[in-house]
Image 1 (cartoon, rainbow, N blue to C red):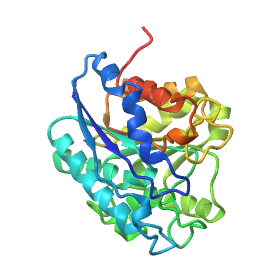
Image 2: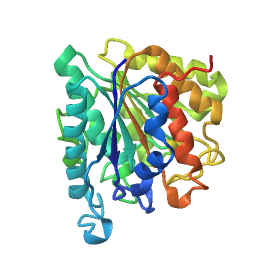
Image 3: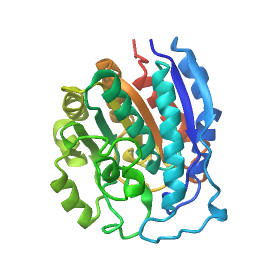
Image 4: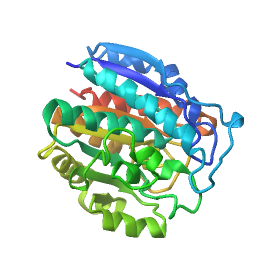
Amino acid sequence: MKPIHIIGVPLDLGGGRRGVDMGPSAFRIAGLADQITALGRTVVDRGNVQAPIRELHQEADNRKKYIHEIAAVCQRLYGACLESLNQGAIPLVLGGDHSLAAGSVAASADWVRRTQDRPLGLIWIDAHGDMNTPASSTSGNVHGMPLAALLGNEPAELSTIGSNPSISPDHTVLVGIRNIDEEEKAQIRASGIHTFTMKDIDRSGIAVIAERAIAIATSGTGGVHVSFDLDVCDPVIAPGVGTPVKGGFDYREAHMIMELVADSQRLVALDLVEVNPTLDLRNTTAEFATELALSALGKNIL
């Protein structure tokens, strides 16, 4: 089994609410490394990628707030993930806000392309589309833009990390969405990516949707990067997230999709993002996210 490299990203510049910079610490307090080790995996905690303190920086451009600082963090994360992949490990990236995926996914895409001459499959699990651009965003918060950037769109500061574009719509799947800006809806439809909304999950069941998503992301690809935003889960089970939205995954639905990812044996890297301890209850969300990581890495019921 491949070793697991834990990489923390204490980045909170991408969203409007403070606190997700403490997410990596919350995972470590939950005992993430020890629990992965108990699965029989070798674990290396590579510490945190350096991220700036918000109070020491200015927004600069309110259409893409803190973009230069965010891009610098993503570039450092890109390098860290690439190094882990080159060492034969699976990067487990702990956020931090979802803008960090512009670095982690780009690294996975470039590594798969170089080592296997194939594209990367991406499963983006999120209540939100993260397909805004600076022109369409009503908030200017960059954590709503990384998927657009990975597909080659603005903001250019993120899309030019690694190859541009990093991913193809044909192999990109957005799962669990239920809170999309109006302009963003049109951009998602025009992009050609595959989408499964919470309505689809309600109608068909999580197992069917997860199997479809994995089939799309693994067909003709060199593996799958899973980028999991904890706000895809209902706030009842994941209260400590930056942008909670009612009506999300329940406990077993969240585990099911991760268990099926593990069954595929195609996981290249995993992001777990948007854990906000300042909004949490006794570290509930980080402990739950730790359980999800274990499911994605092969923990079985029997």
